Image (tube, rainbow, N blue to C red; front, top):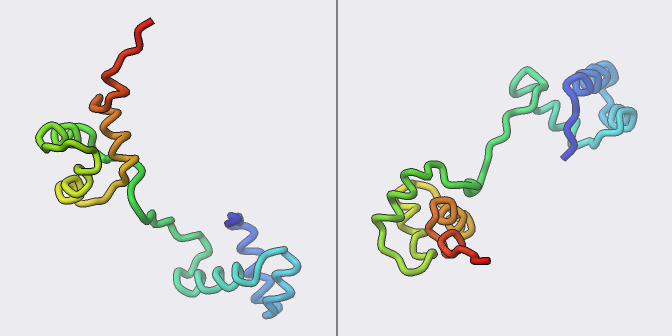
Length: 120
């Protein structure tokens, strides 16, 4: 999605209020009609044109506390990495993907890649 400056938003809205014609305003400024509709809705709801803060959705990209995670790994019995997914969610209260779990194990030195040393 294209980010528009606050100055442009104000100019667009001023022309819209002056003319009352959405299509012409959109053509003149080269924006989508849905964009203008969104700005009108935003201004009615918040009385401003500043964009609302983005709410992150989905799983986090990393483990939030590596020290607690390290203690969790040392006290939780497992033979495969995927066996840690459910207990992790129960203990920490959020889900992570297998890849994030593996990366966390790698960061705390619990993967083979970290323990095997290449000899020259």
